[in-house]
Every structure is written in C-alpha cells, then in structure tokens.
Image 1 (cartoon, rainbow, N blue to C red):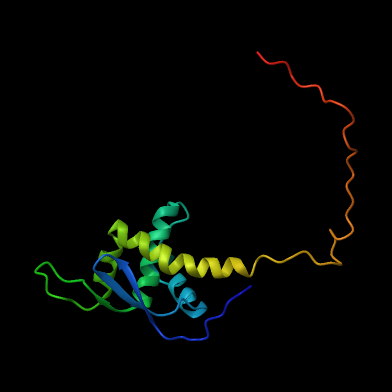
Image 2: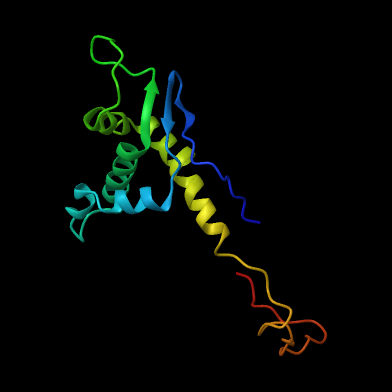
Length: 145
C-alpha cells in the first residue's frame, strides 16, 4: 500500500552523530530541479555512476537543506548552510551515505511502491495452466567425480 504523508513541512533528520539537518520533503519539483542542476548537466556520458550519484546527492542537498545543527567552520564557529558547505558536508563519506539512506532512498522506496501491483484476477496469468508434465519415478543425475 502506498502511504502518503500529506504534509510539506520540513523535517529534521539526524544525519551523523552530532549533526542534524532540516530537510524539505523530496518532492517531484525538488527532484526535477536537482536534475537540472548545472553540475548534473556538465557530466559527460562517460562519467562513472559514483560521480553521477555524488553530483545528484549534492544537487539535492543544496536544494533540500534549510538549516543544520552541529556544523561549524575551521574555528568551530557554527555556520549556516550554503552551497559550498553543503558540498563539503557530502564529501564526508558518513554524511553522504546517511543522506542517501535517510533521505534519497526513502523517496526511491516510495517510487518503487507504485511500480508493483498484484496480479489481476482477470489478467493474463489468471487462467494460466502448467504446461510441464510431472516427472515420473526417479530422475537420473550426472555422475559425480
């Protein structure tokens, strides 16, 4: 069953220990906007899947992250999210993995939910009959070495 959360309110996500981010919901509009990001458009067709995944994650994060806690500059002074800082955050493997798992993958799972459907009682497989005959007796096996 497809479960709809009928709110577009941003939500906090604990990204990595000591760091949490306030994220916009991953809507169609946000995904389309991220796909149009210049960093995505500049990728060549030969770009590695990993490079494309990182570019897409950064494009999404730059659009989705509204606030954060637990992130500061080199002196430890808290900073607000900005494109360069968001990219730097996602350059950290644990942050990237958490963002992919907790934010992007949730949306992909939701997308996958709509792709599956039960067989229709009147569909092409409803009246399907087995065409293979049952095996009679023992079946010879290949010799073992």
